[in-house]
Structures are given as C-alpha cells and as structure tokens.
Length: 368
Length: 121
Image 1: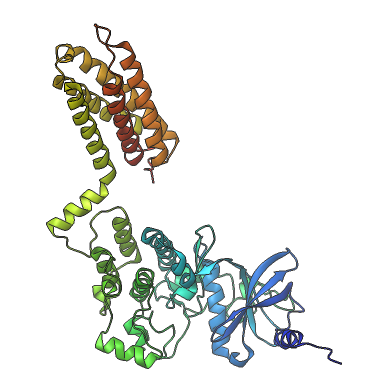
Image 2 (image 1 turned 120 degrees about the vertical axis):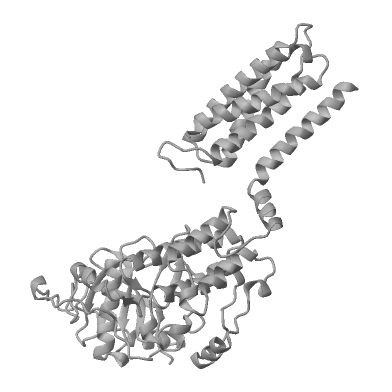
C-alpha cells in the first residue's frame, strides 16, 4: 500500500530542513527563497498573529564571521527606519547558535517582474526614484548597500518600493560613532530576542562592530550590478559612489530590460569591465531619450569621480527628466531644447492653437 | 504666487485678449470698450473661481474639466445679453470662452502655490 505520495514526501523533506523554532514565537509556513548564507521563510508570528519573513542563517555557513555579518545586517536594517526599507521586528539566535531575524513580510514582485509588466517609462522612473530615496536615506546614515540589483527590490501592488537584503551592506568610516549611539543590539548575537528569551542588560552590550568586515579582495555582491571597484575586489574603494553605480545599473535595467555587462561569472564581468564593453541603452532601444541615457551612463561611469557624487544628484536629474527639464548629464543642442520645450508645454500649446483655430473659423463663418 | 491670484492675473490677460478679437468683426468693433471691460471681468471671475478650485482639488484633468464648465457658463451669461440690436453671439462667445476656461484650469493646476506651498502633480 502506498502511504505517502510524492507530494507528501517532498513536503516532509522540506519540513525536515526547517530550523528548530520551538522556543520562538514563530511558526514556519514555507520557504520564500535562499541566498548564499541564509534562507528566508514565510512564518507566522504566533504572538501577534501576523505573517513575517524570517531570515535564518544556514547551518553550513554558521561561522563566526557569518554570524557577525548577519547580526550586522539586522542592526543595519533596524536603524534604517524608512518607508522604502523593510522594517525588522526581531532578532535572535536558535539553540544551535544560528542567528535569525524577523522582518515585515512584503508582498509584491521583484523589480525583474515589475519591469516586464510596467509599460510607461515614467512609471518605471518613479519606482527608480523611490529606490534612490531609500538608498539616499541609508547613505545619510553612513550605510552603503553594495548589492543593489533587481532581485533585491520589491515593488508592491500599490506602488510601494522596498529595498531588501542588506546582507553585504557596509557602515562607512566616520559614521560608526553615530551608529554606535543608535545601536540597540549587541554584536555577540544575544540581542533583543534569543531563542531562550534571555535578554542582556543594555549596559553590558559591547559596541556595534563598525562594519561588515570583508577580506581584502573578496568580492561581495552580484555581478552585472557591481561597480568596477567592487567587481575588481578593491574593498578600500567602496563608498557611496559604489551604490551610485549600482543605481545606474538598475536604471539601465529599467530602461532596457537587460542586465548591464552580461556575463555568467565574476571573471567574465571583470573582463567586460576591463574592456569597458557596456552596450549603451539606446543601442538596445533607440526610443530611450538621449538625456536619460546620459544620466544612466554618468551614474555608471567606470571611474568613480566621474559619477554623480550623491544619490540625490542622480535622483534630481531623473526628476528633471520627468518634468521635461534639462538634465545636468546631457548638453542639448538648440533643436533638442525646442523639442523638449514643445513637449513640456504641449497641452497649453494645443489649447492656444485650438483657440486660434476656433477664432479663425468663426471669423470666416461670420463673413459668409 | 497663490493659485487664485494666478488665476486672476491669467484670467484678466486672457479676457482682454479674448475681448480684443471683437475688433475683427465689423458689427462688434464699435462696441470694443464695453466688450473689453466685460471680457476682462469675465476672465477675472473665471480665473478666481478656477484658482480656488485648483487650491482644493489637485488634479489636472479635473481642473481642465472644471475650467471648461466655468468658462462655458460665464460665456453663456455674457452671450445671453446680446448686442443692442438683439443679436446673440452664442457660438462666437461660448466656444472660445470655454477654451479660455480650459487654459485657466490647466494653468492653475500646473502652476501657482497651494495652501502649503505644494505644487500640483
């Protein structure tokens, strides 16, 4: 007799890999996704009866370095209270020492899916501006994301945009003191909620680790969206401009629906970087306005000093484009200026033309 | 500049320009002063009403529709009076009047400051 069908076996197999959350208020419902060092589950917060996204470190990578990285990620998200950054509810450790944290369960599509559906360029640019707002907020708090890519951006049903996965984020030197004063979690993993619910006296908490340490030359992030200095493993060169580059790459993706620097491996991406083989957006789609292409290319400049110096500057240029105003990244000729002016005032020009036409017709009707 | 004030100024200017077109018609040219005063007052009134609407409702399409309605109504009231011979110029006054109302609706929605200094979207 066949007691278990394949579906049940698969389900049991999946359940058997679930972490032990028996001493936490969470109950796992299903796997949402997994990354290099952690798995994200859809779970139910049984105390508050609400769904949460639970990120649990994988047992295979449960080293001291990855524990501190995950804690740092939780701490970074915790202090970035912004509508565009997914809020964290809880952090703790499991009996086996693995770190987990619970965050808001965001329902929506990744930017990859959104971009396939969103038709109007203006709509896509407004989503891009929301991403810029969230990243600029993080930068204002001395934090750089370093892994901005379409899969890490969620777009909700009502147009809300969330920047996710701060796993390789870095706290910039100089921002550490400010951050430490905000620190509400310790760096040993015995934070706000541990599996055995043991809470530390805040005065006993050691200061927050200044940044997610990465070995020199280690490449963290995702190829195609990495800044050249990041892809080439120059950790010392990581700055806000690294995110500016990735935002430019996201803009590239939103405009062309293609990844910049197609390449299967980091090595291949490096080769592409060296040869600077970036297909200009207008080569993929000639309908993309030149000024918008220039904004994208400036943000993705190979040399960091040639990029926008701040995310806000990039966002301003996109806003100017949306308002049919000249952008800083592109020098227009007189025909382009006239075209943009006509486009900007097209409705009022149409009404005035309609008025004159009516007057003209009425004049001749009156003479009949 | 507030939206009602913007509406008032733009309405007055468009009203004068609209009134000046009476010069093209031989029958109405002798009455130009009265037409100019009436037309500019109509523009002023329409501009203020449409400007206040733009202050309350932030929507370019609705602003244009409202402007069309106000322009048409005020132009109808003017056209109703007719000239001294009793001739009515409904078409000549109402059609351009409604377009002027739409221009005012668009301009007050797009430009001018709202109650908290926030422009229209």
